[in-house]
Image (cartoon, rainbow, N blue to C red; front, side):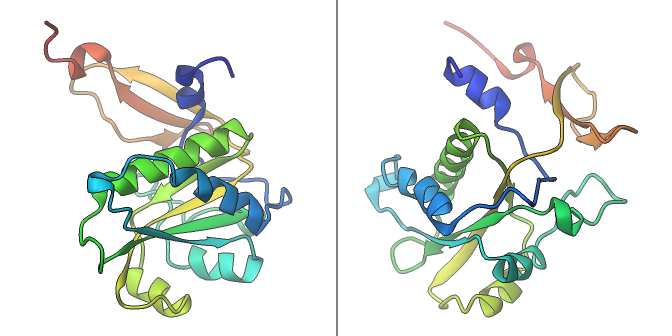
Length: 193
């Protein structure tokens, strides 16, 4: 990988993984550790993490996730295509109630670091939060913010430029290639001075 643009282009939302490519808890902790050095609003650092590379716990976490909202006929990956690990990102409500900026920075940092290591992931905000809190016995003062699936991706993801007004909904073609429409620069750049 030569530059940040290449790394960002490689860092996609992957939803199918080689489940035989195992991860250790230490692999996930090393991704979390990098987030300690990222920016945090007012430097409050309200995020906490749970890392799971254990199949039984992974199965519990997986049962709380909605995998692909735009793909209506797909419930999620088959058991042999599920991620090898999960990172649950929590917000410590005793420090800060809304940590959206920190969550975004943390999630992207984790995915970039995973991509650099030949891994991939997917960020989930569609979560059965109460169920997950009960399953993992998460204390009340910690809010479930997002879940990040991590593993060795096996699907091909293609980025496609779209014209103004075209659908932004991702989709899979008949060969299971995942297509991700992106607005062109001309549509998102309002002015330059």
